Length: 165
Image 1 (cartoon, rainbow, N blue to C red):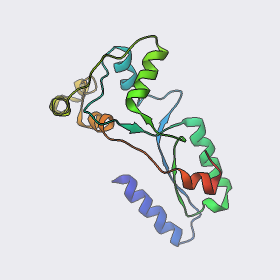
Image 2: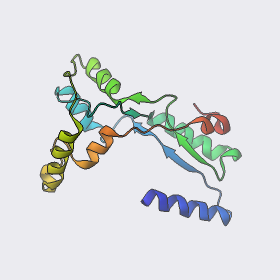
Image 3: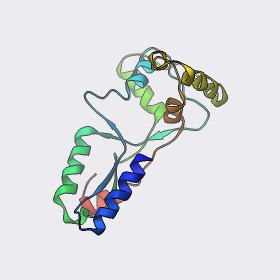
Image 4: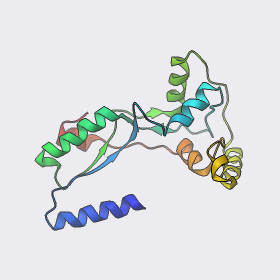
């Protein structure tokens, strides 16, 4: 909701002549990244299994590439008053990402998947825990959302107007 309000504020400022660009990044990763730490830990401890039957697609972008895209937005007049989705050239399946992490560390993922109703029940319990314990819960509703919803973006506009890929 805050993102929507921020974008509306920028769009309103465009009407008053503010030279701005809206950038919507994909899944940003790179050195110092902590928001994927839970995924890495679950893979490395042999605890990661896909949830449900549908593949989940993520659209990652390396932090240095995102920085390059932001510089392009600041340098190109064609970017003014535009909104760009900035992500890698192709989405990747969460299961493939997890398998790559496991392979890089010389381990394998356990077989099978977790049924979605079971995951929802565990996430509901995780949300009830006090803050100190909640961080250590295997699932919460927000983690479940990340692990079960695809996020794929159309990056053609950035390629076309910014020559960014």
